[in-house]
Image (cartoon, rainbow, N blue to C red; front, side, top):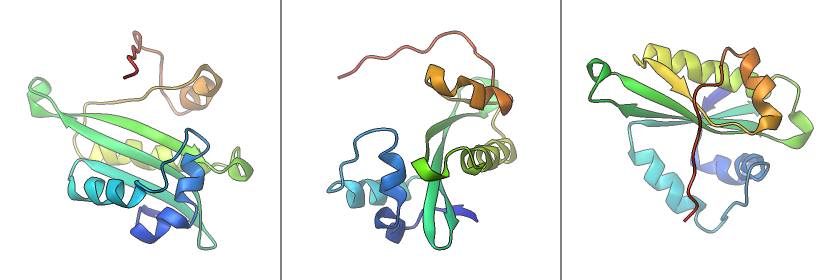
Length: 137
């Protein structure tokens, strides 16, 4: 089942999933959850099976001055527990986010990916486009 993130999910596997991507600040997670819950343009989904979080993915909407005020949608933090990878969890989450972006009137969906995961996203219809740049602070 795919649903929105709830506070109790933080310690029911959500942070374990994110740990597959980067180091997680367990102490800050409650504050981050509260802040993200207050915004109307961030959607965090979880994939739940047998009351355990197996994966997560987020959608962030950015309303543009151009494109008739439509949204650019950004997919972030697609993360699946190691033991559940390759079983359709990430694909299901991304497909729901794409459909949500479409339903919300977005004109595009973008994301950043490691080279290792490019094929996964290409199977879902994404294409390489221009270049991503990053400045670590």
